[in-house]
Image (cartoon, rainbow, N blue to C red; front, side, top):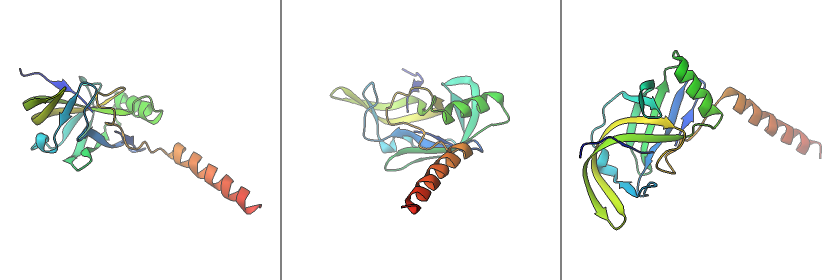
Length: 165
């Protein structure tokens, strides 16, 4: 059956750069799917970044997608000239959107107990989502100037308090 499947950690900078783990290897998602490291094969460059798997919400472009020992690591750029991308960036920075999820077509799979092991797939898209299928597919960092300034202020106050002792 040829159907698009939806699955997938996440980080966004002030410039709209997103970094995350779109699919952690060796662990099943919430429905029992395990995607093997070699399953992704060749990945199209400049893969579209969607919001909530909605093709009408093309909010950016994935510029790096590579399989590592940890999982399918991704880096991309939000199109901040678009209002929807700016809105999603704000949701990520507030922690309201923190997951990644992949959309794919299965080419080869097998059953192993209660799990489906996916050995080959065609990756269609990677989305920023509110709640992904894989509990460890997350935005890995969400940098913003305000957050960094707040952390620096806490460190400076702690250092000043220690200096008074």
